[in-house]
Image (cartoon, rainbow, N blue to C red):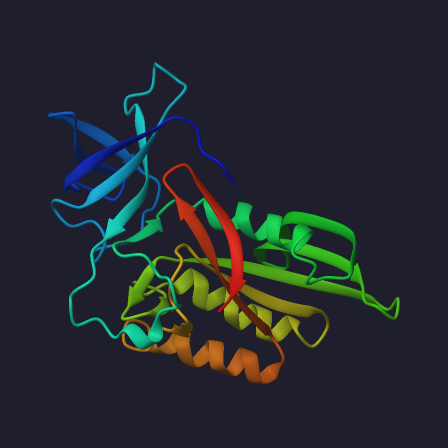
Length: 242
């Protein structure tokens, strides 16, 4: 996916989940943050951030914060990074991006042989999932799959992790997918919104119940898919499996 006009700024602070103060060309501006997660390891005073300019001149905030540069410490464990990883890491923070990227990946990656039907925002029971998919495999057998997408912005020493904060909503989705996998194929796609980590794992320290539920989901047959992305200031594209 590609963004519109991009400007670079310097992060100052974040008064609330939706607003950040960013210095642009020597002037402090209020910016809309397109990610309500904590992102404490990313939004640090002085960090370089990238902003998309809104096409609506009547908006109270004229820019959206979509990406940030994360500076690595000198003692980072390099073995967990892919060869050629560029530091500082450029991380996409747009919480709307993972679904768009996952949709592109489903249609264009070749992971699914022949897609017959793809519906976003699919409701079943009391839950709504990101995609419902019908596809044919190489033997022309029909498959019906329910897919949930999670964006990953947390990285430590070359290991991408989810979540960055306790998330009851995601826990509910995992448990529901585990139940549904007896009737449907089910999958969780983790879109790693950066290029570099070799490894993905659930964040046991931050939300142990989610991590254990994800492990159980995998053991019960829920597919777990993770891939990284190529991130530049004005676009983010799906790339390779992790």
